[in-house]
Image 1 (tube, rainbow, N blue to C red):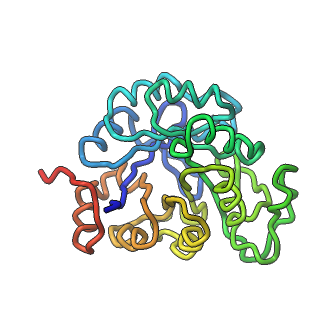
Image 2: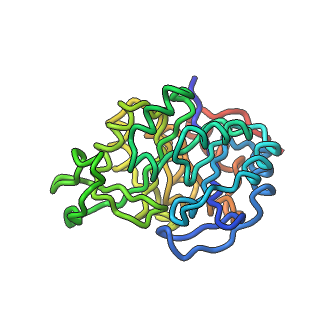
Length: 273
């Protein structure tokens, strides 16, 4: 039986875990190694590390911190932020990561997904997709040349953003995800920028459309505010990414997994004391 996954996310800026609302108003949330260790020990299924300013600042992500976290935990570990070539992916895997998350670089060079999947296997390649709904129609932004065929139209539900949610690329989100699956992406990490940090609940409609569009596992991100939000979304997707609810002690991983078992959703065994 395939279990539902609870995945804490460490958004890293200047070596610290941070959290914001709608990708702005960033506040400090703690020490990454301490949080990573605590989450692994309390039953997290995986851990995601995202250096959220590596792409926007045009710098290499924090390799020493990646190595130290990999040494401290024993659960699958995904790393993202500023990754733009096969050598970087190899270096991150050599440090102990199990998967890499591609976002901005893949949007400007989609063949990176294909090359990475062929070289390392699709199971290592997570496509992170940051999206905003466009209820008033697309912005008219011209997509990167390599993705001009995915330009948003009047029928587009949401568009894709790059550089940590700073730049609208004018790309139809569902079409981009379908295309990435064909290129070899192994998993989709979908973040609703509209819901991020709001605690108003996940965008289940959008997530369900994505899940129905591809055959890949889908990780939901953005909007969890209470237990019911998590149990609700995991009836539709494969995993829930969590940040502020865990970082600031509003919920624990055992709390969440207990609630999931109560609604008959399968989970990996977790500490009960």
